[in-house]
Length: 368
Image (cartoon, rainbow, N blue to C red; front, side):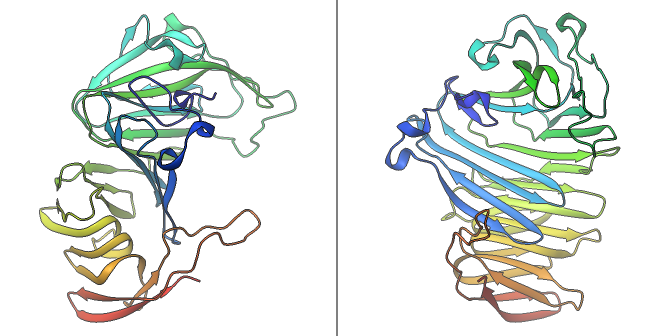
């Protein structure tokens, strides 16, 4: 569909964004960062004027340890509707939901079922879609009837999908978040032959400018993310997230006002960042191993401190010999489908790195 609520995005005040061909000047969204370090991939898009009532409309997406982190920062307007249209034949929540006879606005459903389920959450919550091999499932509340899964006559369109796969969304807490399970526009996907409704999750916040912070992990038997929490942080509007898998822990820091110092508390210890965005990956025994900085001049945490003369983009990796290597990166670094670079090379950057055993100056070579 052409309306924004038919996509995985945020609709403001229950209305669609304007079509892209109608936008002019600073109304046109732009990719602010696109970082492709081997251990961490990150992109951020700014569309602060996509709605006239907005002062900030930005989305940052991070891929690390096979986990997707999604930070959607929306300031302005009265009602923020975060939507995710999942591809699965069942959808289950980890909190009780209650039936609602008619969802509004009906335009969001795109011809789907007006009946839905609703919950209100103050804590973190999860929704899990189930996908799998050839079968027919009814897995919906009885009052809504079945949704069929009937693969194509010539065989499964995804021959590697021989086991049941689970795709989980976990949204971090914000008091008063309304959660809806919608059956949006009916689908007939060919060549898979998947018929029925699309299982859509909507998270609605009213008069609440807290960023939407979500994790996505996909798995066969056990979820990848074992632990997750929002860490106490300031200034207001910043996000500090910690999550852990079986093999590592990651801390994500997002500061929409980089001219203001960001402070947070991680495991009872103070962390400080001067800049916009940082990711730190730790080993299972708690030692930093990978760092990504975007628009950052200083980062200080237990066991590691980094300082630069001016804000820059860097990726750092701790090698097996115990030495750190660093790469300076441009704001945008990606390639076209035919392998041609789209961005300019980054220049070299000097930084000072302190650990419990060393204090050294490192030259981060620009990625070329």
